Every structure is written in structure tokens, then in C-alpha cells.
Image 1 (cartoon, rainbow, N blue to C red):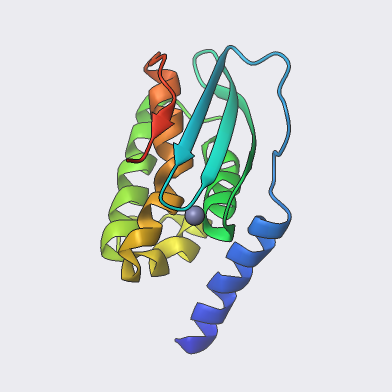
Image 2: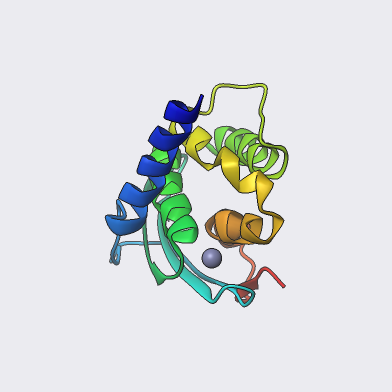
Length: 145
Ligand code: ZN
């Protein structure tokens, strides 16, 4: 179990240091900023969505958890339908708040340990709440506070 835990931490460190899909997406039809004042994490999402989430990129700065979560989110959600995104969002939220999830969540499982640190849950969910608000057409900057 401790080896599994080490592996998960490697995934977080790797994605935190080398975020995937990092940068601006010029053809984005949704953009959204999110801010977590508790930790100082900031993300800006660039989304190209038609019937599915065709492409997503992000920029931002913050702790390893926030950057890794945003990076993993872009990988996991690309190509997904709105219904699939809702389902994954629910699974992810359950995972980071309770540490377990009934469904297979793949690489996202690396963030299960966040549930042991309630203050970090906002770091892990920042990009996800920002995505939800972007797709809902909410004009305000997302704040976790
Ligand atoms: Zn943070």
C-alpha cells in the first residue's frame, strides 16, 4: 500500500512540474478564470467545445496539487460529452472529499490522498469548479471562497 501511495505521489509531482495541455488555446469558445484565495492558486481554462469537449488547455500558477489536478483534468476530460463530464466530476469530487469512489477513475485516483487534508480539497477542485462554471456560461471569476 505504501508503494502504491508513492506511485500516486509521483503522478502528482510529475503533473505538477510538467503540466499537460498547458498554454493558450487560440480557437477556444469558452475561457474562464478561477482563484483559490486560501492557497493562492490561479487557473485560466481555454475550452473548445462542440458536442464534445474537443480540446482544453490551461494556464496558471499555484501549488503542485492544483496544477496536477488541472493537468489530469484536461487529459481525462478531452473528447468527453457533457454527460460524461458530469459523471467524472461527481466521481472526482467524491474521491477528493472521501478518499474513495465506487467507479474506476484511472489516473485521478492519484488525488485520493487529498481527502486527508481538507484545506487542500479546494486546491484539487479549483480547475474542476472553473470548468463547470465555464460550461454553464457563468461570467464571474470562480473563487473557492
Ligand atoms: Zn493550492
